[in-house]
Image (cartoon, rainbow, N blue to C red; front, side, top):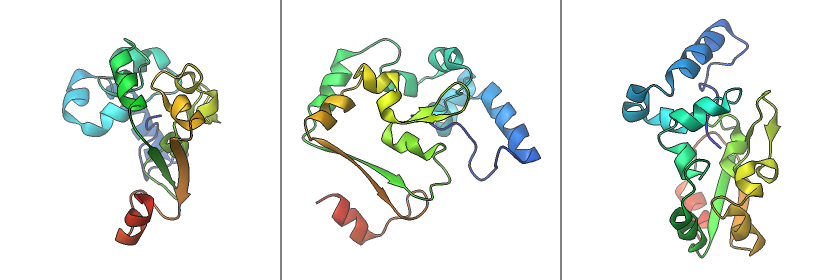
Length: 156
C-alpha cells in the first residue's frame, strides 16, 4: 500500500538514489503532505514510524492509526470491489501495492496476505475477498493505460 520509489528513476542510478533520499526526508513534511498529492501516498518502508506519524492521508485511509470503524463499515458496504494491477506499472512502486501489498522494512515485497492491514482486516478487504465481493485482476500495460473497451469490461 502506497508508493515507495519515485517513478522513472531507478534506485540503482545516481539520480534515483539521490531522489529517493530527498523524497524520503521531505515526504512527511507538512508542506508536502498538504500541497503535493503524491506525498499522500508515500510510504517509507524502512521507517514505518515516520509513515504512521507523518502521513496525512494513507495511514488514516488504511486504518493503521486511529482505527475508524465507520471507514471500515463504508468499505464493507460495497457490493463489490475490483483492484487492478498493471503488469508494467512504472508509477506504483511496488506495483503489488495496487493489490494492497507493500515493501517490508528491508524492501522485500509482501502480498496483501502478509500485511497487518489485511491480517487484522483493518479496512475490510479480507472480509470482502472472503465473501466473494472483491477480486484482484491484472491487465497489460503501464499505469492507467486502459482503453474504453477495457474500462467497460472491468466495470461490467
